[in-house]
Structures are given as C-alpha cells and as structure tokens.
Length: 394
Image (tube, rainbow, N blue to C red; front, side, top):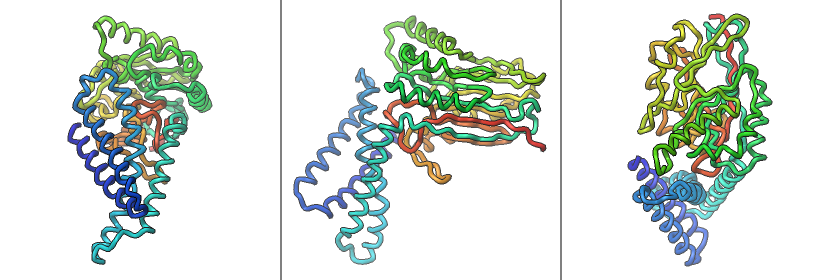
C-alpha cells in the first residue's frame, strides 16, 4: 500500500510541475508562484504526516476524508491537464524548446477548470446522483418458472456518511420503482457503529420485494475500525447491527442459504460473511453455506468482497451461477463514458464495477449506494442494480 501511495504522490508531483508552467506562462505576477507552492507543500506535509502517524491520530477518518477531498480538488485537474502539456513538449523538443504557447496554456487552464467544476458537482450533488444499471443474464439451466425473474441489488449503504434525508429517500424510491421480484443487499450497512443506522431505519424499512429482502455483512459492519474499550462492547455492536437488519425486514444470511420457490420450482440463495484479500477478514465460508444445496441447483451467491469470486467461488466444487458483490465503490472516482470505464481502484481490484463472466459464471459488482471517505462521488455514481434472469435455449 505504501509503495502505491508513493507512486500516486509522484504522479501528482509531475502533474503539479507541468500545470505550474502553464500558470506562469499566463501570468507574470510574482506572488502567484509563492501561493501556488505554499498550498502544495502544506498539503503534502499533511498527507505524509497522516501516512506515518495514522496510528496516533484518534480522528484519522475525518482528517483523511478532508484530505482526500482537498487533493481531488487541487491535484486531479492538474493531473488531467498533464497529457496536453506533455504533447506540447514533444513538439517543442523538435523546435529547439521555445517558450510555451499561451494558447495551449489557456486550453489547459480552461480544461482543468472544467474538471474542477465536475469534481465540485460530484462532491455536492454526486453523492445522491443515483443511476439504475440493468443487465439481462442468460442461463441454460435456469428453472423455467424463474425465466424473467428480476433482482434489485443494493450495496455499501454506509449510513454513517448520510446527512441528507431527501437525498437518501430519492434512492429508496428509485429502488422500489424497479418493482423487482427480489431485493438483495451485499454489505456495509454502516461505517463503523450500528448506531449510525438509527436515524435511517424507517427509510430503509419501506424497501419491498414480493420474494423477500436478504442481506450479508461487509467488512465495515464488524466494527473493526473503531477503538473499543472492551471486546464486549464490540460484540454488542455487532449484535445490534444484526437486529437492525431484522427490523428493516431483511433476512441476514451468515454463511447459510435459503430456497426460493416459484410455481413448483426453486433456486438457492446463498449468503456468506465477509471474505476479502489484502488483510480483510475471511469469515465467509462458501462450503458451509452451500453444504445442503444439491449440486444441480441454480445458485445465487451474495459475497461482499469481489476478490472472493476469483479466489474461491469460480473454482468451487459447487457451481455458483451468479455472484453479487460490492465493496469497491468504484473508488467513488473515475470515468464511465460511452463504454469506456476507468478508475484508480482497478489497480487494486481485478473486478471492481459492473458485470464479469468466467467459465459460464457471472459476477456483478455494485458501485455502492452510499459513500465513505470521499464525501461524494465523481464520475462513478451511486448505483441501483437491476438484474433480469433469462432462460437461454442452449
């Protein structure tokens, strides 16, 4: 992780130096360079301090959130402007390196300004800019009664980050408007503590689906990111969180499975506890959860962390047709336009947003309903997933 942070800092530094050249090309005011570098140095010192003192700062999450937001606003526009200036440098190289073009510098500053405004939108309106994403999945062995069966998936609510009840209600109404047969939630109900959900229980209780509402736990739900004064308090927090699932009408699946019946046919729904790579807990046990399910049953798995799919699910002895995950949030920052999809999270997770397929098995990674860390979303919007199961002829 530290090596990746150093790489990110180097990229930001390169972008910073290049953007500075565009700024001084457009202005001869001697105070501009002073203010430019003072802001950057203070920000970098703060970042380095948090990296090396993170164990000593009690309110590290709030500080980190503010820092991430500031870095996005200051550095990202510069980083996106870098390729334009770099291309100009290639041309300058063959012309004896004359002074930078004022026209190119103007284009760079305007472009960076547009990126800045896009980030501001994401930090203000983006946190509740819900998008419905729909996929139709075909299976040759799907029971006929379930042909056309619809599933709404929500993930990563992170209620501890919410402050706008109207914004949250907008997402709930949009989820209900899909009129899906089944509603599934794939973990991270809170940031840290069960009490974060108390103001929002009534809002989420109104979610409905005729074949039920089911959920699993995510890494944040266990309370691992809080310094508890005793183990008993941490255990009580988890018990309360499980009660909240029940109060909202969700059946929480803890390494277990249920059978869904329709017109005399059935499919299996499996839910495992959190299982993740890179230091995350591996409480999930697919073998235990699927123990009593016939091998030839159609199976849907809820597993919070998508790394579980590659590491365990795909090669598991029991064929899992569809896995639903979340966890990544799409890093809440990226570009998704005209079929192009990019986010820094893809350098950490192979499957990070949307639909994936391997060996006749599907994985869908939800981009998350809420937000955490970064107080908004830029380019990777909060998601309500609607999956339609279809029976193929072959």
